[in-house]
Length: 239
Image (spheres, rainbow, N blue to C red):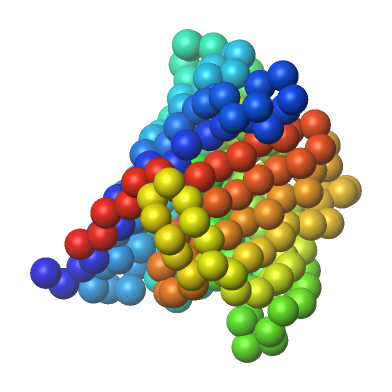
């Protein structure tokens, strides 16, 4: 074969005292590394908390830095269709065609300084791929990034889909040994910080652990503050 595939499952749980370690959702993903240096992500995400969310994402990105090429998203919220859309990213602009219950038909074309470096379409596995932006040659430290995009500014990704510009910092803590339900791994530990002023509501502190290799597979993640959520890789198959 001229491609490689990683297929896995991520469990969503709560860390709130009254719901400690209760399952609150799940995610099934496939990440295919193609021979043309493009990675294609398929992710099916389910959030059980009311109003429940079902999200299906297909996104293509460059293998080296995970910068987006195109993406499609379909959302169901509260067991009802919420919206669907398609986005494309070119040198100097990004465009979106979508429809949702709140805004109807949406057509966007956004001028950008070069190519967009990152699109978060809200699968948790994507939070690990985001860390490809950090230059590991700098060692542990902090880097701030502007002109990043989301398909929804909502922390659950339950609105849109549409293009929303943001920015934040990535902190590289270092390498650690991590044990999750899927096994034992050497991991890179990152944090997402400095979201204040770049989102309608500041995101709580967020830690992410991913595989210490070129695949950046999500191993574990957790958000503090009012969210108190935890994410863990429970299954992983690579071939």
